[in-house]
Length: 104
Image 1 (cartoon, rainbow, N blue to C red):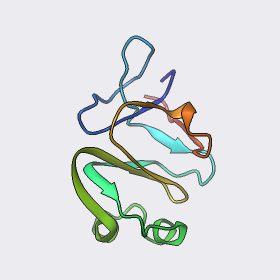
Image 2: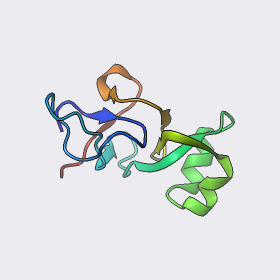
Image 3: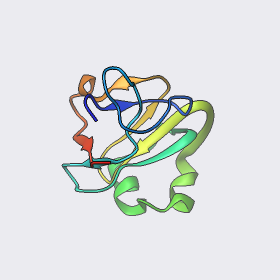
Image 4: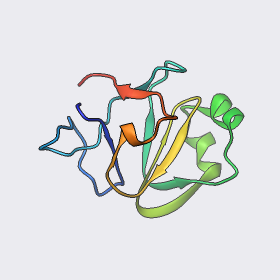
């Protein structure tokens, strides 16, 4: 993917390009070396913290306690970072995230 896009559940997934703006579904974190999980139609509760994700990733049943249903959104998380996204966003606009396309 180049550029790498994040987006809500209504954004199509796949290999993203400047012409075909698709959200990457193969994200990997270079900080914790973990696959980035994504959950359609959810956002993260504001009480989420680093230890919550470190202890509960990638088990949906454990993560679910801090997820809020929101149609059209998508919750992303690895073991060290998390984001709730509503609309198509270029990953480069968020300098704190160390996520890259893990190759399709």
